[in-house]
Each structure stands twice: as structure tokens, then as C-alpha cells.
Image 1 (spheres, helix red, strand yellow):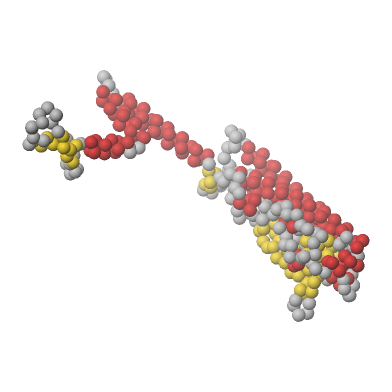
Image 2 (cartoon, rainbow, N blue to C red):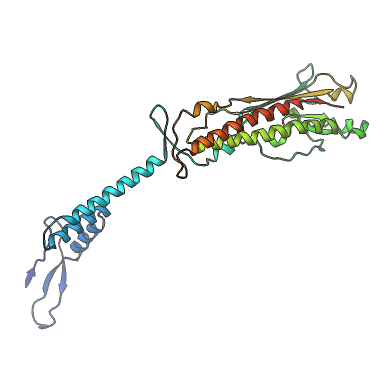
Length: 329
């Protein structure tokens, strides 16, 4: 019986395969070493090499078989690797912004969080209460909130419903010609609550006056959002910017009368808006920004546009406040 050992690496397990001699059936069985596992293992290790290492090894074999014996293939492969590394470094550099202190920040394009910043503060609600500290039926007395860039949610409210303000039924019964509505202090399109703490009885005329105020504020918030998006496009971290519109709505203590249902109807309401945390765009001109669309001066145009938008917000807030005194008659 003959044992034939095939090539195998020292320390590796060797398996044997039984092979029948087809020439002479009476001869002893012959055993051969099965080296397929070693070969496949070697092949796998070769496949697992990185692309760069494979290129270098391939170039080694090519250069070794070349007539002149030069290492030109190695040099070309190394140059290719260096070019790839330089390209990646350039792409990373293009995605960062160096400020005046020399630090870098990663540019975050069109982040969803801007639309999710509904309130920078609040909302908070206070309702009218009796001497015992219980709601007296009049509804909301004071609502406040600082609206962020995502404050406009465009939720339609049901101004005809009496669910939030039960006394509205008795008021409408006595004054059908005034078309009383369940008026939100903080408008529903800004996410204002539909609970009694944010509802008051408003005539149709008063409700229309408040719409003028709210629509100016709505437009201002939409412009604020554009400012956030523009600054973010320049690589500025706007998450802590704090730029928004503060809104305060106050219902008067004075009522139409002392008896029901007049005691549940306010004589007037005051709506006030204020710009909060407006960015000083002039200071931003001193910083450095990445080239945009092949135009190194593109950021200057963007900042000029943003400066105008900030001024537009202030103008819209002033217009809103001009319509902020609501006569509930």
C-alpha cells in the first residue's frame, strides 16, 4: 500500500481521499492527499485582498515578467491610488465650511428639522376662572407662543362648533345676527389648541379682524423659514438660531354685561407679534463659505437676499400689529 503526500502547508490539516486503481483491480488501494481544500483556501485569501493590494500584486507580476525589468507598472498603480485619495480628500473638503476661527463644520443640506421646529417657546394658555379657581365658561384669557420656522401647519378649525365653548349656544340664541364663532386666541393654523383654554366668543366681524393679523404673521413665519433654509445652505448651524415670531393674544376682562350670556362675551381682544432672535446678516459677510455651483461669490448674493428677507419679516410683523386691536362688536 502506497501513501502519497501532496503539497500542503505545514500546520494545515491534511485529508485523504480513497482512489481505486482502475488498471489493476487486484492491486492495493492507493491513497492520495486531497489538496483541494488548501487550494480553495488559498484562492479565498487571494480574493479577500483589497483592490489596491490586488492591483499592486498584479503589477508586481507584470513587472517581473517584463523584458526590461522596470517598475513602471508599480509606479502607475501607486499614482492611481494617490489620485483616488486626493479626490476623496477634495470631496470631503468641499463638504465642509471653515469659519473665521479655522474650524470646520459639515454642511447639512435641506434638513427636515427646520420644518419640525414649530415652537421655540410655548404654547401656553390661561383661561378665565371664577373665585373658586374653576373655569367660568368664558374660555381663554391669554395665549402665548414663539413660533418657529415650522409653525404654519394649516389646520382648519371648526368655528361653528360649540364643543370647545358650550356657552356659545346661548350666545347665538340671543344674538343670531352677530354670527358668533368659536374664535381661537392662538390660531389653529399655528397649532393653537381647540380646547376651551384657547377659545373665546367672537362676532363674525371680530373674527375677520383677527384673520388680518394672523395672515400677516403666517406670511412672516414662511419668510422666517426661508431665512433658516438660506443660512443652512451656507453651512451655518441654525438649530440654535432662535429666530422666530412671538405671539401674544389677550382677551379683555371687560364684557358686554354682567348677566348671562353677556358676561361671557369680551368687549375686545389684543393680538401682538414680535420678532425674536433676528440674525445680524451683516456680521455673516466676514465669514468664509464654500464655492456654490462654480461661483465663488455666490454666498454674497445669498446673504444679500437673506438680509432683505429679515427686513421683510420685520415689516410683516409691523403690519400684523397694526391690525392687532380687535373690537368684538
